[in-house]
Image 1 (cartoon, helix red, strand yellow):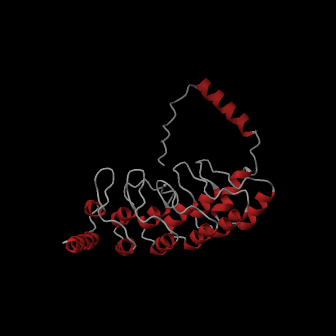
Image 2 (image 1 turned 30 degrees about the horizontal axis):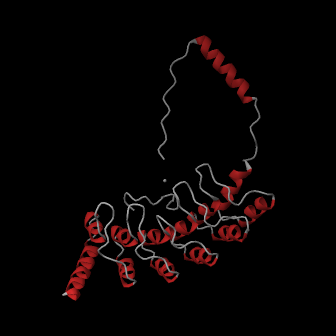
Image 3 (image 1 turned 180 degrees about the vertical axis):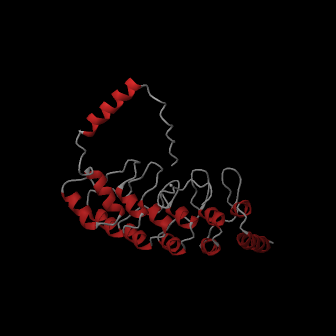
Length: 247
């Protein structure tokens, strides 16, 4: 997705530049001796042999290690823990398609099903983005919020053209013209990505072609901006059909 507020952490969210280290300036002989002595002392300090429990838990989530996750949760670790980027375990599981772990977390009564990362993304949004239909269905069966305010799961499913998930969300009363904070609709996201079948699905379920976002762009404008000829053709034909029906 191009210039989208959707996280690439599942993709992802899913995705950071690191500063390069400069070379050390030449040291004087005395300073060098001190440096070497400090290094020798440092080498005597014991290094922990095992990773911190939270790091072990996060790794187990990423690799869908259900046994590892269950053992750590049984020892009292919080199922709502987050990694060093503030991403909750359930969102990580959704991003990585760790379905066994996600099911275990959802079975835990302490788990917050709507918990969000710092970008405001939750598990249902991430599962919709990566195309994990099984997890989407499980989350919905656990009463996950389909019509989340702001960016919604339907935006995420439409952005990547996951028609099966779009259909499930619509079947569970997802608002087809849901507006993001800047007024972007799922139809606009589908047009931006060139997902013709997704666009047809949304239109057949009542999506409004004439809706504009905060800067006055319609779905057709998105298709033109991102050079999606098939979408431009299809939406233009729909527009003409609408105009003829009004006459």
